[in-house]
Image (cartoon, rainbow, N blue to C red; front, side, top):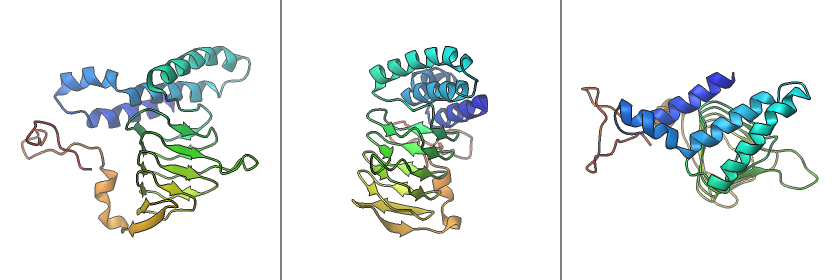
Length: 212
């Protein structure tokens, strides 16, 4: 499972890097999102071992976590459950409660907080699949974020969100709810577009065009 989820993280980031095979293969090792996610995958995997064996393998995880916090001001708690294909758009000041459950192919911006609403209430949000969380968004309390939801920047989500919705504001409200049949583009977010000859479609600056 650790290798499948890590491979999904690598593959999703790799698809979003412009350039040929050689350029992608080199640049992917410089992506902070991949560094943070791989450290999380390792920590989440070794926690399954019985003590004291898990303690031995958690020592490298603790060291790597400190390095991630120093370099990127970001780390993902190993106790959290995060599906494959996670992308951190900009690492920095991201807080995720250890009990949080996040689905597959989610995108998280900088300064995002996902946690409990009160100190005496340990219930935390549950994030669905293909969810985009904009920079500065706050998801608080025992709520469920539906699949394919877009949460705008600086939105404060305090209630359950429907599937295929766009949430903005504080407190956040649904400004748009789309049909599943019209949201194929969301599921292909951060996937490069290709022209008929198999080459990447580029803009006037020579950069690859994605579907977002």
